[in-house]
Structure formats: structure tokens, C-alpha cells
Length: 242
Ligand code: FPP
Image 1 (cartoon, helix red, strand yellow):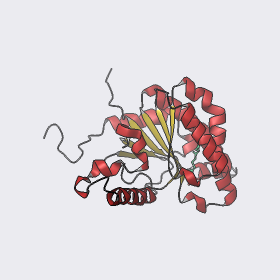
Image 2 (image 1 turned 180 degrees about the vertical axis):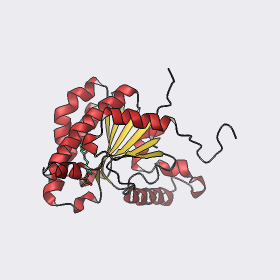
Image 3 (image 1 turned 45 degrees about the horizontal axis):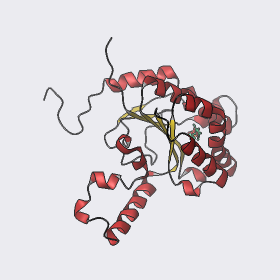
């Protein structure tokens, strides 16, 4: 059997919930609910396959512009998700993290997210990291401000600023050596980053697929991991053949 090179950290832009629902004559929120259930399926599969971290773009800082009924539904999704799937997450030793401006979340959503983080903090399996109320440009500006504060307080020196030290000011730094995804998958046929992980994806392989997120199956995930394993990652250098 050929051994595949598996990405350690996979990121997914879970797009197409609305269109999935529309195709079926359902309200958009039915698409988000189906998307939530599919996330559990894909997260379990990723964990079983040996992926170390899975980051999912679940709510962007720009998503507040949607109608309030949809925003309210999306804000309740973590409550529903952890209520339904916590036993399964614990069984699989999945550790929950949230990357985003969580202090702006409604109190109940924030409390549920913090409880899930606390409850799973000693789990040794895959990290399931929700980019929730996350926007990369705001995160980078926030990191610059934090860095400038440290500079003013003489905790750091300008000469020491480099890619690695700057990375430690980003919200994704909590993933430590798994901070940067190896593979980005975006569903639903769109081919853009939508203000997701602009820094962290610098050397990620990207795969854009046509399936709407609720339809994205374990078979599709395995196909995309296979595609990843055939990519030649050079990180700006030359391949082994020179
Ligand atoms: C994009 O599809 C999807 C979202 C904005 C929400 C994604 C959220 C989930 C899949 C559930 C996540 C689960 C938890 C626990 C937070 P879209 O609405 O932009 O679809 P469209 O482009 O077809 O309209």
C-alpha cells in the first residue's frame, strides 16, 4: 500500500449552505443546520484519519451584515453543536478551540464556547478550531497594535521582529506549531479567501471543490487528501530533483 503524506492541519471554508437550501426550496437556516451536522461527520472522519488540527470558517466578521434572523441562528449554532455532539467529541478526544473576536459574541454563545474549550482542554486528539467572528485583516491590525504596545513598554525590540515573532501576536497562535494550515479546502465552487487566514495560508495548498458544504462527504474529503498528497510542496525552494 502506498503511504500518503497527510496534511497535519486542514482548514475548510464551509461555503454553500444557502444555495444547498435554496435548491431544495428550504430556508437558508436549514442549510446552516445541515452544514452543522455535516461538520460533525467531517470532523469525526478527519480525526479518525489522523489529521491533527481542523480549522473551520464558521462566522466571519463580515457575516454580521446578514439579516438579523440569520445572524441570530448562526449565533445559536455553537450552542446546538456542543449540546448535540459533546459526548462524541469527548469520545474522540477532540479538543475545541475558537479563533476570533469572541468578546463580541452574545453572552450565551460566548459562555457555551468557553465551556466547550474548558471541557475539552485535556483531550489529546485532533484540535477542532472554529474561526468564529474571525476576519484576517482585523486580526493582523489587532496583532500590530498588541505588538506596538509591547514595543512601547519595551517588552520587545524592533530588531527582533520577524515572521515567527509576528505570528505569535495573531489569534491563531494558540495552535502553537500547528498554527499554519497545510491544506485549505473551499466548497461550493467559489475561489477566494474571503478574509480568512491571509497570513497563515501563505504556503498552504488550496483545493476548490464544487460540492455545497452540506453535501461534502467523507469520500470527498479522502479524495481531496489524496490530491494534496500528490502536490509538490517546495516552500519557495526547489524540488528534490533540483
Ligand atoms: C457559508 O455559506 C456558511 C456560513 C456563513 C456558516 C457556516 C456554518 C456552518 C457550516 C455551521 C458551523 C457550525 C457551528 C457549530 C458554528 P453561505 O451561507 O454563504 O452559503 P451561500 O454562499 O450558498 O449563500
